Length: 221
Image 1 (cartoon, one colour):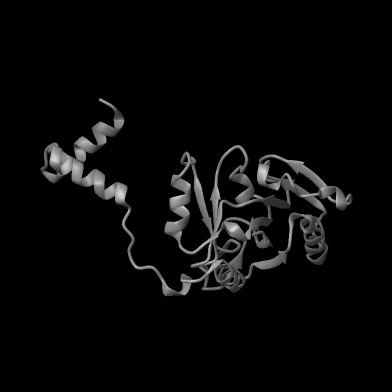
Image 2 (tube, one colour; image 1 turned 90 degrees about the horizontal axis):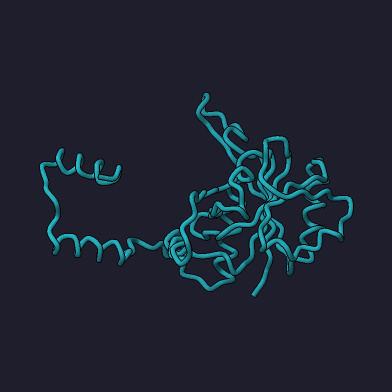
């Protein structure tokens, strides 16, 4: 007996139920496969431009800064300007994400680029994102070799490059896209920089992750 079967067996025993019959099992499998929708907020009933604007509005509402650019060619200049504005080192720990390969970092030779996971010594991490959810301004981060989860949490500043075509309306839309491929080991949902108000109801930034978040939104078609 596998661990899963043992655990489920103990749950059935505690509920006073036996094994499900074939018809009951089939009904449950159909319900899971259907993935029915509940209430969908009317604010996301927009075209691609509207969803992008809504996403940006919600992102800014949680103290995340945003640069909107026409193409990947503009990313190095915007990143360098942001680092200078925040008085941060021009040293980026970059996710080895194929979607970021087209960024011409050579345009800004003063930037030092290294790739891979963070060991906690990197001040600025730069990653892509799987999707952006307009409903709440949330970034969906899919873990894997091309996106080490440490880059989401260990650097003090997190810069995210995302395309307009990756912005979806709701969480359900994002999960539908995730299910189209192999499910990752971890999915992180990130809304703004890390913060807490647990101590005397005073907001403290960087409690469990980056103190700053900056998004470069590429206006692709």
